[in-house]
Length: 437
Image (cartoon, rainbow, N blue to C red):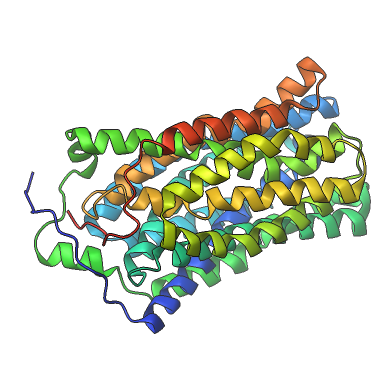
């Protein structure tokens, strides 16, 4: 293992270049997260199309397929992270968007259960596995890429833009699902309408690939490579260091709130509202869409705030607020009133912005450039597999078994408290340059 003295070199990327890079990163993230999120929004229809079962069990099987893909995220993080730390971030970001776009488009042309029987859900889950592998290489790579290009003192703000892109992609998927469901009706949605959102991955993927191929690698990685400081085995190096092992554990537990936020409040919410709370599908999608607007507005303010007061304070504040407001907000959603449901969902969305808008830059800053893509990616994607992708399946199962529609509220409080405990152990590096080694 080569030894390179630890360095903290201020980033001198000019603002114009940083904005160009941020736009490129955000377009790619938009395409990646749209491709991943549309599966959750279409769960009810996919259950009817791909499984010969009663509707309740069919939805659970769809969310099982959703969850299974998350267990391939760590594999994607390991392979893409290793290559990203060895040959550069830019090449891997082109590869992952190509892979997920192809997998998503392939879902859109799959034969149904009525056509080929059990082979249909088997192929669906196989393509979800490819999606999961790809997303495992996307999050840590894209966020490392943006952070390593961002001007000093603005890393929180610049990386928060990527989170806006991710939630705007969910909003696009939500509005599209709502428009198709309302305009086509259930019969035509199950006949052919469900294919449309998946096939849109083709133009989105082409756009993302084109933009990402035209950008350069990060100053941090290029500087490291020029000094001969690239690690030959970044994960082995990470596991050999007590400091980095501890950082990977923090990367596993600090994102706990993602389970109740990203994967329940947004991805699972339309299915939860229509299946358990007896809202119409369009009403459930409307509530989700409104909360997505709220969080997209709040995220950059949280990112900017973290640049001023530190990442730790913002995330801890969001966790405390969610622990207090989670149950009351879900009670508002459970009233059956659309306006009150919108209020409850939007309050939680603004609170969650303090976590999701800051979590990635905090994790980026835990690791040096030399092994950032690999170590950050492994910890974060194991967390996503254990506590994120399984959340819709867990909520569906527990609601069915307990008969209580308040299960997501308790999950929100528990994950918030878990994040609070974990983030209390972090050394905040918001006001220090990124370490190269």
